[in-house]
Amino acid sequence: MGWLDDETGLDRDPANHVPLTPLSHLARAATVFPQAEALVHGDRRWTFARYHADASRLAGALAVAGIGPGDVVATILPNVAAQAIAHFGVPAAGAVLNAINVRLDVDTVAYILDHGGARLILCDTAFVPLAEAAIAAMDGPAPRIVEVPDPGAGHTATGRHIDWDAFLADGAAHHPWHMPRDEWESIALNYTSGTTGRPKGVVYSHRGAYLMTMGTAVAWQLPPRARLLTIVPLFHCNGWHHVWTMPMLGGAAICCRDITARAIHDAIADEGATHFGGAPIVLNLLVNADEADRRPMDHPVHVYTAGAPPAAATLAAMEGLGFRVTHVYGLTETHGHVTECPWSPEWHDLPPSQRAALQARQGVGMPMMEEITVLDDVGRPVALDGTAQGEIAMRGNCVMKGYYRDDAATRAAFDGGWFRSGDLAVRHPDGHMQIVDRAKDIIISGGENVSSVEVEGVLMHHPAVSLCAVVARPDARWGEVPCAFVELKRGATVDEAALIAFARERLAGFKTPARIVFQELPKTATGKIQKYDLRRRAADL
Image 1 (cartoon, rainbow, N blue to C red):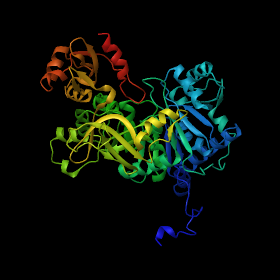
Image 2: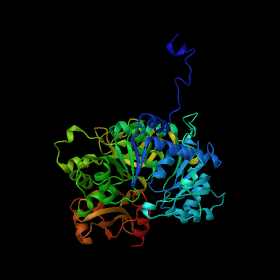
Image 3: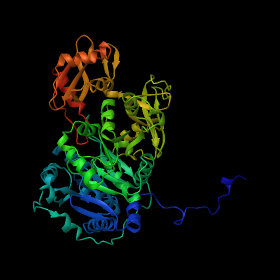
């Protein structure tokens, strides 16, 4: 008889099995680090004891308002203290947190509120008109609004709704938390960008969220008492779960409502920020900042960047400024980042441009994931030769539970036991992945595939270019040709012919942009360039 055949009495028990949840991090921190600084918003400070108490008050107030396990509570908040507190207080009431992008249009917000079934909205005063208009456009029952003023940012309460402090007064600092009975219970509902139709509701589990915090701490080598600057919007993959991570380390979250180079440098100099995450557009913001907006840095600052493949030129410039950037990759469907490009000691002696090119790869799977690979059209792993292309596919505990109220889309997403990303990539001999392009962004010119990422990377090396995006433009002869949209650095000049010539020296003829348009690029709230908008513009040229 084998070992596994004789496990009599070896059952799960409250003594040896507790459902995993990031709520446990703040519960522990309130005991272990009660007087340590946990949360910063302007000139306001929260210790872990107060942070836990406010989350408890929120949970209690939600219960008084009739919000119970499984109910959805939405937020329309920038990165302010109430948003961080809601990340603990809403699930502590047993409810599901639905953090909504503050830059969405009224119709999309109304759709999300209807589809998700939110019963209550925690709403920043600046976005109360958006919430009110969305509620008026809803088909279903109207959620109640709790208004969160931010006087320090010039947003005083409208008086049309109960405000945050009055609402929390209905709760108690020692209100008991509703911890999950099963770690598969839902903790958050996040909506995709919806660039090709209505956004999908992505559901996260307590288990996935907990393991994301653990994996992030290990991969990023977060130290005790790290000080995180919240640049990633907390409505985007719950801020990559970094606010859920900080209490585990006794670290502080520093709220950043308005993302500017000056605000980032001030937080580093005045608040001792040591870490932040951000899209490549944030890196460009820092690289191109005016000297008046920069301040001396007396400690290294570690940065996770994701959202789009960062240009090697940007990574090299960030290194020169004293930032230690790690490229990570993930999707809303994977709780955020699930691959990383860790620093290798062998890169130390390489030229800066070569180091930056290596750092721009999507890298390898993070420790909380089971397997991440690149599969060809018949589901086989591609060769590790840096040439063979396939689709990034993954499996692991940080893949979403599924799409809310969309069984067909969930089944399609998990076909064959993998979550397919939609990103085309190669794998190099060292096992690192590198995205070639989004499947939908590949340009097919005269039968040849053109990677928009490759063309963008070349254009970003021009000293006058701040940002660029390359899309397909219809062409009578070639079917499609590359068309580049370019933002120039402040005060810089270059004309279309010169920039096309610059690209032609570095690219094959069929990869060289046929047109270059100089304009500000349309972006999402998380800094992603809206290529679907640019495709429409390119078609009209």
